[in-house]
Length: 306
Length: 292
Image 1 (cartoon, helix red, strand yellow):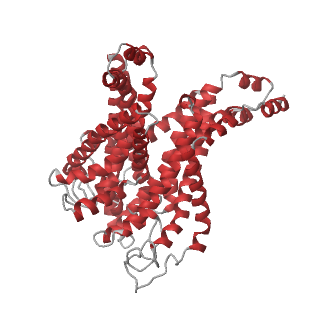
Image 2 (cartoon, helix red, strand yellow):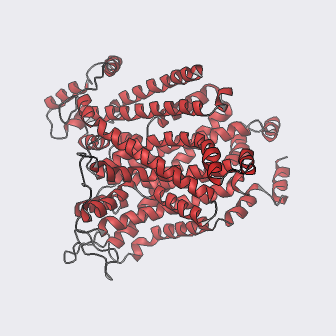
């Protein structure tokens, strides 16, 4: 087991290196002169020179690369062109908000998604199944920003239960969390349903029933546990969608997180911030996928054989 | 030899394709969804002719009106008819979805076939690139690409195509790996078929069903992503009647005019829902595990 974990961790290293390299070349791939683009059409030649210096574009590429990687290893992400403060500082101010938001969304969507999936799966082809799966496919097809607006209109504007923007109290997390988690809950529900249906065909379920176990025990102790093994992988993959979805949802709610920071940075052409945020998002995604893979191996004894 | 093959395929009544059509016809929801998609496609061609008002027809006497007999979906802050703008937006969303996913499907299929068939260094390279593209959450990658190329619908199409490509590449690669050991591939090799012919005439057909399902599902996702990007101001620019942009415009007036945000969202929801239902139906018709 330990060997598998070590092997998986080592396997991630090449991807990490390529991702860092990609992000490094990111600013340098902008067609034309990035410094001129950042400075804007009215900027003087001196201004452009200053920005070129700030972006570190004067040095030869290999030297820039080494400096960039050394900086990263020291936690130095460069300065934001917009606020003139270190990007690391900007990120740290908002980091926990996004973490709280995504974790909250993931927790509720896993609970709701799994329950809905089990409910649909065990009543296969009955009204419960149709209701559950109609809800699920609707959840997948709705744009999250639209859900966000509907929630704001009903619960913030009309009922005044929750604030429309900000991240000041737990109340601020409820509406964005719901908007962000809906499609994830729907995906998890669909997946749970099909793996429950798959598991229910197994011999050990027939044995459990033949033993005269109550249906509740059959579902939760036998079917559910085995169905969960594959659901874990899907939940892990959804984390990527959560990180991506946070960009849109945070913009709807003017929520001070990393996603809205990314949008602001793109609108301002703050390339230092953009490249750092893209790196942060993908590093989280890689690490989460790694954790999920390992978790999956721990849960599923079959994988050890291969 | 080749002639014989065609003959047997034609005389065999139980070809996988006919099997698939028979099963697909049982998927009532998917058939309805397909009918709606066909209607949307037709609408996208004739929307400008049938729209009751022009998409940029200002009417300052009818600003921000709610739905009425004259304006079914109400009007926006310039008195433009929202219904006309939304039905004209069909063309934009559908073409973004179709273009981006078609590019992704073609590129991904070719890469998957090459990687799976030749293996070795080429395969490692292709799969490594896919890994890296998979290391970014989809929309983040799209935003990165737009940050490089600039905003606009063409760049949205490119961005969505880039992040959808690896899915197709992996899908086709795995089918290629499973198929290339078959006797018929060996036979084609022995009679001296070129590699291109083997790849496209003998291996590709077995990947087609999976590609079709993935294609349909991806269109829904790509329409959602494109509208999200427009919503964020990175896609279509005003006064284009793109649905995501209409929605984003509505947020300013959310407190007073709910209809400006409600209807464009419904349009996106309905279109994506149709593609997802169709994709589900196609998958169920193709998946032998669910056929009982």
